[in-house]
Image 1 (cartoon, rainbow, N blue to C red):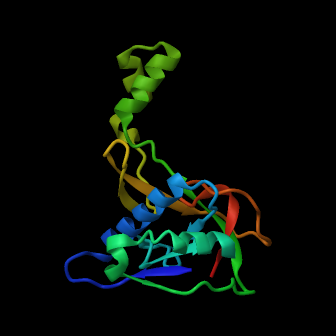
Image 2 (image 1 turned 120 degrees about the vertical axis):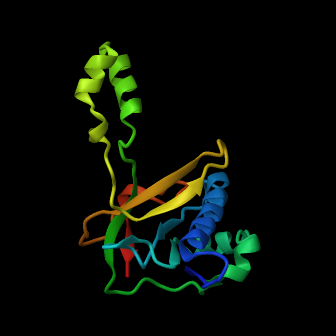
Length: 183
């Protein structure tokens, strides 16, 4: 089932997609009995972007449960939802997982000092400011509903698999091992 964000002069596409995804995440946090995976058919690495569609993947009962929750709320006028459809035969299977960058050298130094009992200067020599990792992956800018902090949820597609790999998906609809159909 696809949810395509509609063009709006007041809100950029990526912001609407992030809002839509946040609403889905809040629904999935409270309902562990519903297993929904997500994918982004417009996912590209060059340039890193997710496109304008969020695809929810699940069993017919799980998708029916999601639809019955009426989770779109105020997003309804910004989104076009498709009907539930079957996965095409030619689909490939890949995992979609979250990637977190080691982008804060100060936090890494504090961790090294705590774990290895080294001084601030030793930690600074091991982890220079230039050692911050930068990711070139598509991301969603989200806000945590529990802490209010803003963060980027970087997403990475795994290698193509010849057959689906079963498994469970977290409240973000992601898994590092289970695969999703890509089409």
